[in-house]
Every structure is written in structure tokens, then in C-alpha cells.
Amino acid sequence: MSLPADAALALNAFEQAGSWEQRARLLMQWGDRLPALSDVDKVEANRVHGCESQVWLVGALQDGHWQFAASSDARLIRGLVALLLARVNGLSADELQQVDLPDWFNQLGLSRQLSPSRSNGLNAVLQRMRSLSDV
Amino acid sequence: MMIPSPWRADFPAIAALQRQDQTYLDNAATTQKPQALLDALAHYYANGAANVHRAQHLPGAHATQAFEDSRSKVAQWLNAGDGGQIIFTHGATSALNLLAYGLEHVFQPGDEIVISALEHHANLLPWQQLALRRDLKLVILPLDSDGVIDLHAAAPLIGPKTRLLAVSQLSNVLGAWQPLPELLALAQAQNALTVVDGAQGVVHGRHDVQVLGCDFYVFSSHKLYGPDGLGVLFGRHAALEQLRPWQFGGEMVLDANYQDARFRPAPLGFEAGTPPIASVIGLGATLDYLAGLDRDAVSAHEAALHDYLLKGLEARNGIRLLGKPQLALASFVVEGVHNSDLAHLLTEQGIAVRAGHHCAMPLLKSFELAGAIRVSLALYNDSEDLERFFEALDQALELLR
Image 1 (tube, helix red, strand yellow):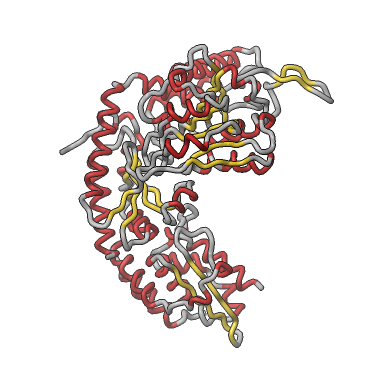
Image 2 (image 1 turned 90 degrees about the vertical axis):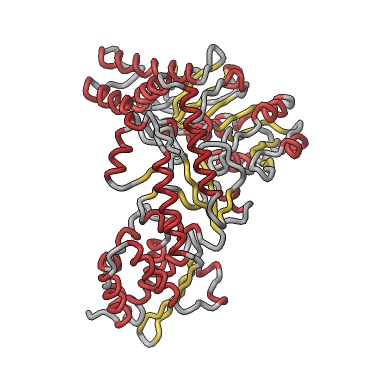
């Protein structure tokens, strides 16, 4: 399974980031590029709980391919979510089932963001994505 | 100005954390442990573990002796004297739950329980749920702008329907001593029971429960440089007579039949099942260690560090302190910066501080904040720890702004 184009771009950029500052800057850039979520989607039903910041996630199958959209009021989690969407948007339901998301963040050098004690909410976002795509 | 800690080397984990490039400033959550405690745990487990209060054999006698010695040390630490008993629980949270269940029969529908707006969840939720079970009113004492319970507002709220007052001695978010003598007097004038949550307060200075005059005083061992899984409940004799057993099981029983049983008085009647024996013995060792320190020197050190922390925060732009912290900790937010972003970048730089709601969601909501960053100090911290924090803070803010 080849990487979506955006994901390949992200991987290339993060592989070259040598320091925590560079990774943080990249995360913020990816977060800034995340398309804005419309206000009608920023409702309680779409809130991902378990985050220090407010995170919203919506997703729908379009012509057999998943399209997720998300936002957050915190910049770094927005960046993490943008990297997640870069990896999963456009995948078929089968492909989404198979993709190893912890490994994806590991490849980006961001595996610590998924450790159980982190309350930034990336784990909660992954869970919500799974429950959205299970139905 | 350098502020070294003469006690730093007594805590081996601090050096270990430093080797991992970690600066530990989350002491209000839990503390590192002195070598004296590690030695006591190793000694207990290496020389023969045994259950307490039930075996006639020698290992059992040794364990029971050490266990009860610790109880005396805790009683001395709080100057309980002959005024009451020390009950061991599994934490401050379970001590407060013991009270909320064991005193339930004292309340009639319509009675009032008074707490304050700054209580952390452990001293809020047990009372809130008791109020819901028994159809009671939970009264919340408001704070003034410095983060101290407002006595003028409190006076009319503590009235003839007040059956119990439960307040923190020192806030885990605002770092301010609360006016306990005045509040306890207001409650006692109404014949209400009084509960003091000393989870943070017990760590700073020495407190005398006889002088305080509260019916119950609660703290957790792990915040006082002791082992985790252990809480302490001091109860005055008269108040303990009203407390009924909550959890049932081994060793708290006097006489058991299939259909009924009679139970021991305090303290054993409230210590069902095997207690955390090693932790109790370990806490005794910690208290021996702490009792050997120069009390004034520790207080002066903590005050100097706290002053250094506040000055450093105040010297930076856009930082807003929560309340007016007096000691131990400071919570803050930075204008235009999300606390989650700041926490992320401090973590990247090996600064261990707490971000979020600090288990006091209603308090944070009253500041209209979703969260804050909290720096909390211990006697082993020094000014270099704070310098590393400030450098990391500056780096993080430079990236975020």
C-alpha cells in the first residue's frame, strides 16, 4: 500500500527534522495548513473528549473513500491531527482498517505523542476515528 | 542568586531523573522518595514480610511492631496526643470516601454540607455524591480574588442546617493557605463536624491537629515523600464514635457469625483487609528522616525557591498567575498561548510540570480556563531546576509566538 501524496510529503519533512524545535515548527506549519472546520461541525457531538484542548473530528465515506476533517484550538495537537488526516484521507474502508497508525507516528519520530500518559488527546482522536469508521 | 538544596542528595531519584534530562517540578502530584524510605522498604521485604495483627509467629510480631510504630510516628507528626486515633487508608481519596460513607447516617434530607470552591475532586465528589444519595444541599464557599475562601461570604453560608464542613488547608492549584481557624469556628458554632483535607498542607511546615481543633484531618503519604497506596485519617475520639465502618473484611471484626457480626473500634475497625504494610513502615521511615531535618531551614529554602519562581514568572510578558500563591507552587496561563501547546513544548525539553485542570475542574471553570500550567516545588528542588524551567519556557514561548 503506497503512501498518499500528502503523507509522503510529511514523512520526508519529518525525517529531516533533527531537533525538537524543528519538529515543533513543522507540526505548527502542518496545523496551520489544516483546512478550517466549519462552525456547524464544531458541536458537542463532534467533540473528542479526553484532550486538554478542544478537538473536533468528523468523517464520512464518499464514493467508498474516507474523508475526515478536524480542528483544535491548540496548535500542536492541530498539527498532529493534520498528520493523521494526511495519512488516512482518501483510503477505502478496507485500507483504513489495515493502516498501522501508531507506526505512522513512529515513522514521523512522534511516537511519544501516543504514550498512554500523554493527555494531548491524540490517542482519543485515534479512538474516535476507529469508532467513526467501524459503523 | 543560587539556592542550592542541602537535601538533594538524600533523594536518589533526583540524580536519576537528571541523567534522563528530566527536571521534576510536579511535586504537588507526587514526590520523590528519600533513601531512608528505600532502605526501610528493602529491609522489610528482605528480612521477612508478614501480615499484621493476626499471627502469633515471630515475623508477624515484628511486622506488627513496625506497623504500630509507624502509627505512633504519624500521631507524633500531627501531635495527635491523646485526642484521637490514626487510621490508615489507601490514600487521601479513600480516607475522604470513608468519611462520606461512614458518616452518612448522621445526615437527614435537607441538611447541608459545606465545602469551598477550590476543592480538588477528592474533597468534592465524595460529598457531592453523598448529597445526591441523601437529598442534602452541597453549599460552596466562594473565593476572594487572591484565591482564599472569602470569610465574609462564608459566615452566612454556615448555618444551623450545616452538618459538616470539609475544606482544604492549602489549595493544590492556588498555593494559598486557607483561613481554617475562622472557618472551623463558624462550623463548630453550629455543632457541625469538621474535616480538613491536608493533602497539600501537610507537606509544608508542621501542623498540630489539637491546635487546629478539627474533627478529622486527612493526608496522603506519597505527597509527603512517603510511599504510595497509603493515606492517613486522623479522627478525634468523639467524632470517631459517629463514624461507622464502611468496608468490611478481615481483622476489623470482633466477632462474626454467618448472619451478623460485631466490629472493632477505631483504628482497626476501619482498616478492613490486609493494609499496605510496607508502605506504612516506609512512611514511618520517611517521617523519621523529615523529623531529623532543620525545620526552619526547610521552610526558608521553600520560601526562597517560591520567591524565585514568582519573580521569574512575573519578569516575563503575558503571564497571568492564578490567585496569589503564597508557597509551594504557582499555576499560570500565558496570554494568547494554549496551555496544551506550552505543556507539549515543556515536555519536549524535559520539564516535568503539570498541565490541565489539576483535578479541580470546577475551580478552573470559575477562572474561565480549561487548564493551566502548574509548577510545584519540593525541598530537594534548587534554583538550577527553576533556571532550566525558565529557559525552556522562554524557548517554548519564542516558538509559539
